[in-house]
Amino acid sequence: MARTLIVEADGGSRGNPGPAGYGAVVLDPETGETLAEAAEFLGTATNNVAEYKGLVAGLRAAHALDPEARIRVRMDSKLVVEQMSGRWKIKHPDMKPLASEARSVFPADRVSYEWIPRAQNKHADRLANEAMDAGKSGKQWEPRDSRAALDTAAPARSAAARAADASAEAADEAAEAPSAGWGPDLGPPATFVLLRHGETALTPEKRFSGSGGTDPELSAAGRRQAEATAAALAARGTIQAVVSSPLRRCRETAEAVAARLGLEVRIEEGLRETDFGAWEGLTFAEVRERYPEDLDAWLASAKAEPTGGGESFAAVARRVAAARDKLLARYAGRTVLLVTHVTPVKTLVRLALGAPPEALFRMELSAASLSAVAYYSDGNASVRLLNETAHLR
Image (cartoon, rainbow, N blue to C red; front, side, top):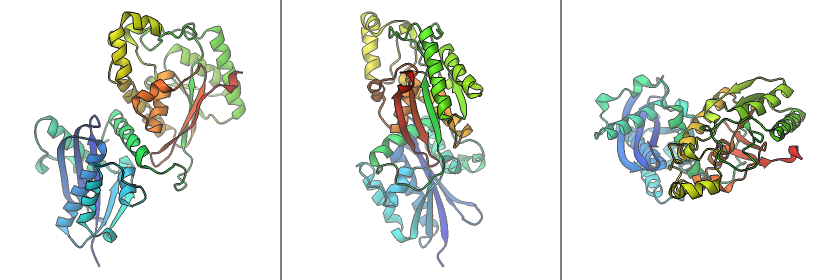
């Protein structure tokens, strides 16, 4: 009988596109022994191109060991697994030739593809990051310098890095995938009910109010909104935990809901609002008058910061995505209320949709509005609600 080999592969891009690298490892399925490793710095490339390059390298390494072997490919890229399995079409022109190259290494009937969680793909992930680290130093990865086999028990990437990769993959997968809802039963998702805090004195005037300003309290109207929301959520009876931004307006809103539900409020720093720098407390018109060039740059690029060293939307997305990943690990399969702000809510929705940064300007969120996103065990997400305010009427 033909020998079976396991190929695990991964790729990453620090910027998507940006400095990229791949890693691949060939394993003995019985003992788990590492039989071969491959990694390479690719220069500038996208996340998915790097993943495909890792797949090709892993298959070629397995072929060098035994050209007659049967291959089980395991990757944490749902996009690559679904495309190479033939269930999703390959639309992107950069990936079509790489997929063809991968198919040419072994006959199709001798290769199977399996999606695995990121936590189970640490070895290949380490190799990819070693390759990118080497490239940053102006070098190429060398097998003798690798610690990937030794370090796989440690976390492969920071939460922020995993979040950046997940966001990049989500955008590509959304473009390639068939309609959601047709997959296997993955069990109950983690559902984040996203509550924007109630009004403050600044809200009706539509002034920039972030994490670098005065940290205002709820107004009388905001307190009424918080109580109305608490009553509505208590009637639904689905919330199992409450998590809040550290800012006062969110804590006050969260405490009103938690008191009605008999729950405690947990604070998550990553859910705080953007730091709007020198724009804090100003209206959009006032910013346009005082800082027109900075405002134009901010509207044009997610990497631009508000005047005075505030946070860019790109920085907020990394922070929010890291908080999301931490909360998903803590509340798997549960329904959790996240009391936060306009930008974090929009960011969570945008990332779930795989939408570009400019989508932030195309969503409306009222004070004390409810949105919801469900997160499944295969890494996919589903937006279930946006800016619902019926409970306030």
